[in-house]
Amino acid sequence: MAKSVGICEEALRDAHQCLWSTRMTNEMMLPVCSRLDAAGYDVIDLIGGAVWDVSIRFLKEDPWERMRHVRKLVQRTPLNAWVRGQSLWTFEIFPNDVVELAMERLAANGIREIALYDQANDLANVEVPAAKARSVGIRIRGALVFTWSPVHTDAHYAAKAAEFVRLGAHEIIIKDPSGMLSVERIGPLIGAMRGKVGRRARINVHSHCMTGRAPDVLLAAAEAGADVLHTAISPLAHGASHPPTEQIHDALAAKGIDTGLDRKLLEEIAGYFRYVCRRFDKPQGKPVGFDPFTLEHQMPGGMISNLISQLRDNGIGHLLEDILRESAAVRKDLGYAPVVSPTAQLMVTQAALNVVQGERYKTIPDELRKYVLGYYGKPAAPLNPELVDRVLSYGGKPVSGRAGDHVPHALERLRKTRGPFGSDDDLLLAAMYGDAILKPLFEARARAEYTRYYNGFSPLRHLLEEVQRQPRLHYFRLAKGRLEVEISQ
Image 1 (cartoon, rainbow, N blue to C red):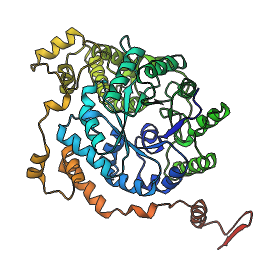
Image 2 (cartoon, rainbow, N blue to C red; image 1 turned 90 degrees about the vertical axis):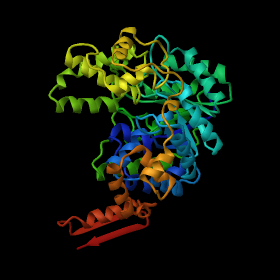
Image 3 (tube, rainbow, N blue to C red; image 1 turned 90 degrees about the horizontal axis):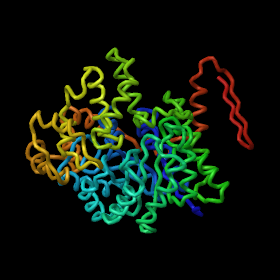
Image 4 (cartoon, helix red, strand yellow; image 1 turned 180 degrees about the vertical axis):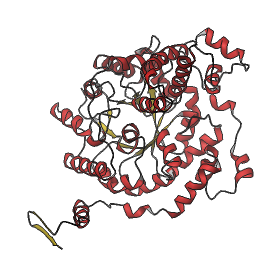
């Protein structure tokens, strides 16, 4: 059993991605950043694929600016960004020059660590960002996507962990997006990894509460020798999110395991996010019961909620269970691909087509054909030969090697065709998005002034502001200790 365990806080990234459709704005997060920095976290998670994309497309907030503003307030605690190999933060495969510049700009904008992964755990696809990240001083946290299949054994993950360490990873993350881990599995899995990497890398456990098992899994992981656990402050925990930070801290403390967290500050942070939930009409996470069907389809909660909405909009909501069950069959055909973006979206789209059209693989979308042909990398197990034959009948030839090597360099072309750019940050945005998306982002960015949110949360001030907004309230008195406030109007 570990004597101390670090905590990675997911409130600013994965938690609101799971519970709020990734809609946490800078206004919501900046006022609490100084408290987060002082709380004693091992690392604070900030940027990832959906957070990046939603920030640009829907919130009209520049993620590069978000990094800079948060870094000014978070001085002590490392900020982490999740990087999906050659895809960075979208579903595209980017050329090596774009990926390398992205690592440079992460470092320049205050990111000290990256959680680096590939959706199929093909580590050839992380070699370029890993090498560049090391050269610019970013620590690498190699993430392996956990899934159940005949080929995803403890030995498989242990070998991948050792490969990540050879690529320069200081830490290994067991990334469990759908809550597939069990108390029985986590101990042997950590033991197998430790046997391969020893103490050359710390082991993280990142598990979601979809099956209701994640809190117990994290505690079992600590007993098995895990070094870092990923949690979310309680208003943003449970559901499809992570176990509550306070609950895990208290349970570990009862076992004599130190987290380094300031329990009083955790209460303040939780109180702040409860206020945010009320003010901005956001849901708080609730515990969920165990659903064995989740173990069959393995789909993350955020994907299921989006799928339900899309099916209802098209009048086929009653097909949800059939599509989820078919997605499990498609996953097997794809070499037991881990259920994580973007392959999760590919298999759900294909499953929906199979069910609606009444014939398997009658229509195969272009992106899934590219996956089958090898443009996304090498799967853990052989693909279904019948699916391969069907894809080959469309035309195209199989490829091998790194995904980024099949895409030509883009930066010079972008400078010539869409430049000049005010910064390399804007150049990278142009590599990922067209002008129709970037123009409203840049217009909103020119108007934004986020420093007014720095340390901007005062419970007393907000209480008094709300009191003054009540037209029928003529008298108000608040007394606590030596403090006494009286308002009459």
